[in-house]
Structure formats: structure tokens, C-alpha cells
Length: 156
Image (cartoon, rainbow, N blue to C red):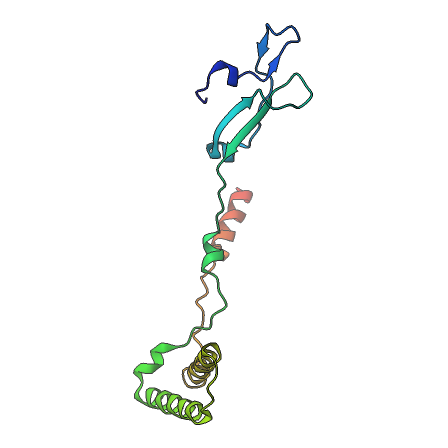
């Protein structure tokens, strides 16, 4: 599988030194077989045995599931309501009032605290005037009709 000189393929040498065999192996699941980069024996490692040390280089693969990467705890605001003039005006007034109160506080705080206040004001204003968007729930594809097919198949 890997191209090496014969001395790097042998994993055991007989006590008289004339016979060499490859009896040491690396087992890996079929799913990860493409991750094995190289396997060879090292004769110089002193292990107090007549076997040679077998080392495998394996590529580490870390993957995050697509759903886990896309899932986050963020609130989605119903931005379509901004097309309605009354709601848009109410949102603008609310934002203006909140930022005026933020300016009046006038504290020279650190940047992170100022950002948290701005973010909180925007989120609170949006939640009060726009509301939260309802998450779409996919319809279950296995409905009564499918269940009926199973019943007719078992009966027939």
C-alpha cells in the first residue's frame, strides 16, 4: 500500500537474523481508511522485544455537522412589518428615544459595554415594535395517507 524499502516493511526478525516477516499491523475502521497517510516500521526503537515499532501517520479530521453549525440561539425579528408605515414609524420613534437616553447617560464606558448597550437597545426596540418571526415548521411527510397504504399492504 505504501512504497517503502523492505527494511521498513518488516516488523519482526528471527533470533538468528535471517528471517524477516511482516506480522505487525495497524487496524483501522473502513470509514477512516482514507485518513491513513503512512505506515512503516522503525528498527532503531529499543522496545526490549524482537518486534519493530510500527507507526502510522493519520490525518485528523474534525467536522461539525451542518445542522449544528447553523443552529444558534438568535432571535429573528419579523422584518416584513417594516413595510407597514405605522410600524416603521413606531420603530423609528422607539429607536430614537432609546438612543437619546443612551446619549444622556454620557458615561465614558469601555467599548464593549457601549456595544452591549447599543445591541440591547436595538433588540429590545425590534422585539417590542416588530415582534418575533415565527419559525417555519415543515409538514410531516408521513401522514394518514401513508399510514393507509401500510394498512392496505399488510391486509392484501
